[in-house]
Image 1 (spheres, rainbow, N blue to C red):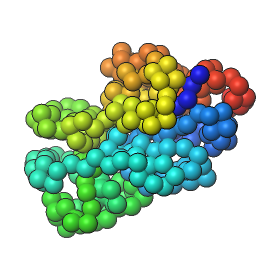
Image 2: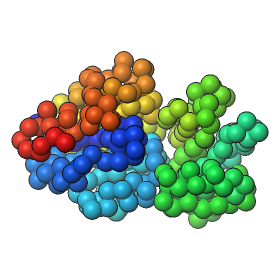
Image 3: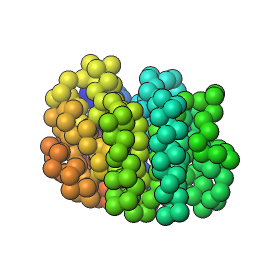
Image 4: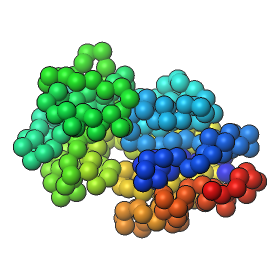
Length: 270
């Protein structure tokens, strides 16, 4: 029996227009009624993800910042911030690529931060962060917040920023989260570890969970349970790690596989 389902958002649960599957809130409610907990497992900021699921926020769980923080019913389950000195060092290193179009976002427990020199980048970040503040110096960390993730935007991320920042892999988890973003979190922070924590919290075993993802920040989720799915549109390396391949995000793959596994949910496929 499935007790827990975790799905990435962008490229996985959300379609190419960044929209949830039709009637997905009703499906979450039906899952809860069947004793199944659904968790959104995203690299995004928690507050933006919570807003996306606002009608059912108390019927599910949230893994945000690539596993660095988790919430249930608006309450913090855990938070794994990075040391301030490492954030400053890594941010300064990434700033060396500024002339090549690389931009930096720092995501904290309370808010996300960007430098105020690039309006277009700020507007782009608002897509993923509902709490976002401009600061004059990106290397300055607010004393009132703790940084969970360094997010680096680069249209050529896999070829430029990702290999450049891999120098810090001995101290941090450097993740290619999609074609334009490199995320840096604590060494032991990843979505797989987060899912494992919540599975233990809920009493869900290896054969009682499903996970869905499309990119390399979902890699560790592919090994924490028997029913792990890479989307048809997923990165080739993720497909190799997954137990199963689901239809693409634009083909409603997550919902289709959930209904195949748990037909008693009785939801008509859209």
